[in-house]
Amino acid sequence: MLNIGVLGCGKIAQVRHIPEYAANQGAKLTGFFDMDAQRTGEIAAKYNGKAYSSAQELLADPDIEGVSVCVANHAHAELAIAALQAGKHVLCEKPMAVTLAECEAMLAEADKAGKRLLIGQNQRLAKAHVKAKELLEAGEIGKVVTFRTTFGHGGPETWSITPGNNTWFFDKKRAAMGAMADLGIHKTDMLRYILGQDIVRTTARLLTLDKRGADGQFIGVDDNAICIYETSGGAFGTMTASWTHYGMEDNSTILYGTQGIMRIYDDPVHTITVISQKGEVTHYDLEKIQTNDDQTASGVIDEFVEAVSQNRPSVLDAGDVIRSMKAVFASIRSSEEGRPVEVEL
Image (cartoon, rainbow, N blue to C red; front, side):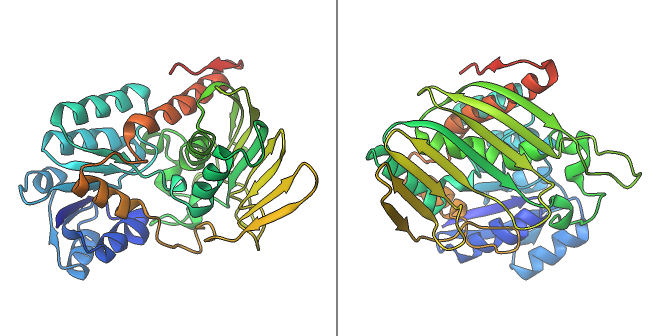
């Protein structure tokens, strides 16, 4: 039984981490901390855990073995490193951190402490993405030549624990990045995962087109990110992340190969559709993708608990996820400098 502490009891903790730990027979929710003391107390009472007055107090508890870091982006590295130094295994929400130096420091501390560091890149565990990876490895559509992938919804102000235009997602000091960090990291990481290739070059624009804060001014982070990626296998394609899809959420990927086309989460009926070069159509009907309005078990908590308990490698290991973060940081630089940028791997 893995005793778990949760740092940050906001929306992502309440809809995914906490209920998924509660449903996992190999984990015990032991302690909670949130900057909102009332919220901490309510969550602790609901799940029969202890409410701590600070993150430091929680991390000092020797009974807690694993920690979920579910705080605002800017504090990911600080709390993850503190947890590792306290001898805890860590599951950190995405994005891993807000600078490459912070990501590298987290990895170094995990290695020094001899503890596991996993990142909540749940799209690697989505059943259609797992199946798509298998099909690609089997040569189902030949070599991928081009692709397009999109993750867009109406914005975090409709989903955050504090809904509205005062959400921390819009605060550059706390979020650092906008749609790119919230959604773009998911699709960047998913592409690397299913293709089995790295992003080696990016040409990107990060833009603030529509979102405004409480003062009526444009928010300080991007609400759209559009990237042209080149992979280590020679494929080219686009990755779009958007907070201005004011309608049905889009979490689709289309891969164009030398022997056919694969459409993933692009059809409301079929989760994967493969169209051969001869026009033959094959459908794979698997679990539908999670949306903000339809939360299902992500698999991330089960993966964390099992990887730690069994001391085995994980598909969510930070040592691989950092390569996706490098593509994100290169894209930010590309947008700032107005030129293509090589991703240093």
